Amino acid sequence: MSQTTDVHMQEADSGRTLDLSVGQSVALELPDPGPTGYRWKVEALDESVLSPVGTRTQPAAAVGGTGKATLSFQAKAPGTTHLRLKLWREWLGDASVIRRFDALLHVR
Image (cartoon, rainbow, N blue to C red; front, side):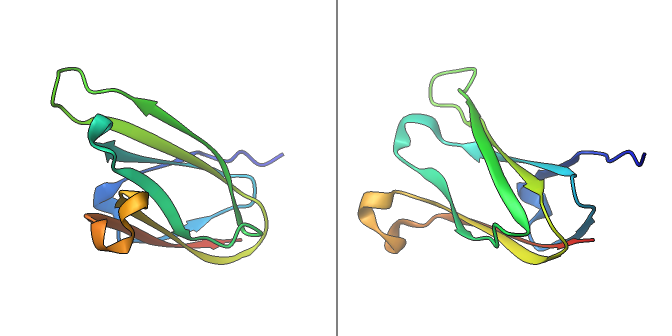
């Protein structure tokens, strides 16, 4: 039986290319600006290759601080996909995007 190791990514990993094995979990930790109305949204993802599992948020330790959002994914099948997200205020549209994350993932 082969053992898979979870992959942990952060905002600094944007632009990277990663190789994964089917069954591996990916946890992407991004800054969460809390009550400002900005939220991370997946823009591009082939869900037949990498499946979203859930999102967990942790509030800031101090008023006005930045918390963190951890988005979890599971490698489902061999293939290649971009994991692309944007930080935006949905009701204001794409003009409100203040950050983006993009990584290329190869699942084998």
